[in-house]
Length: 236
Image (tube, rainbow, N blue to C red; front, side, top):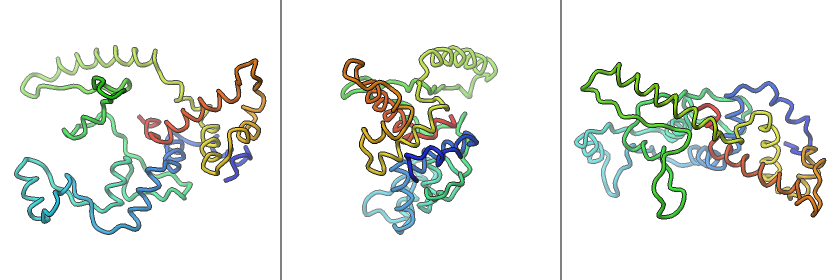
């Protein structure tokens, strides 16, 4: 797609949230590679992972013995599950969006818990992601009081997160983000992008102004890549 032609992106004006998520996901390098691998690599994916030199039966018996549920999945099914869409994985060349599965609230497996924490810097404490919350319920105690308490805590957390909400989740900027990603994928230099996208071209880009256009492009590219690498946050 010619990123420099704004008319090529007019279709985004009628996109749903699902459509937007797909436009970013189909540009995600990890997704593109995983889809390609699913088409060319043979053999299933074992969940949980099979040990080296372990037979299928040995793997199955080990997982069941440890209280788990062994699953042997086709690569397209495994990939679809990882990207929260109805199997199989959707071709990134297709402009038609897949059906995404709504993920929240959801029951976490133990191995999933780590996905909701992050380590900002090496050797730094593990911190909870700002926009996610994990609660523990005691199933041996009455649930109504626990649910009421969770609601209060969630409401408080949501207000806190709203004050610190990331500005990259701004729908009116998403079309420009797609154009920037496509421009970079096409090998366009920053100067060409600034000249080709009117939003940047009209900004003062002199040394006296601190190179406003170049700084804004850098900021927009960072936000665009964040959505490209985690497009499903649009649906969260």
